[in-house]
Image (cartoon, rainbow, N blue to C red; front, side):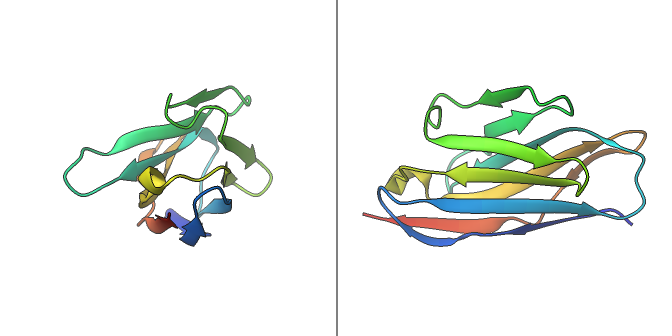
Length: 116
């Protein structure tokens, strides 16, 4: 059974940093794209950043220059380094993995709260 487990959320201060991790476990062939999305009450879930298996990245305009996505294919893990945090970054962050021959999987989410 495939599972995505996120960690690293919590309380951060404006201008500070947090790092999220997400590890894919289970019997899988390989993983294509991985990414982070976030959801704030009253808004739709939005893309934060994605990274392909080859390392190509894509970012939401709101986080460009502040967040960095990376992955370790040997560990089936994706990371999100969040710097220069803003209160508007407060959200539940979800990890996504597009797994070859299986499909899209999501983590349960990790709450990030940024205080001003």
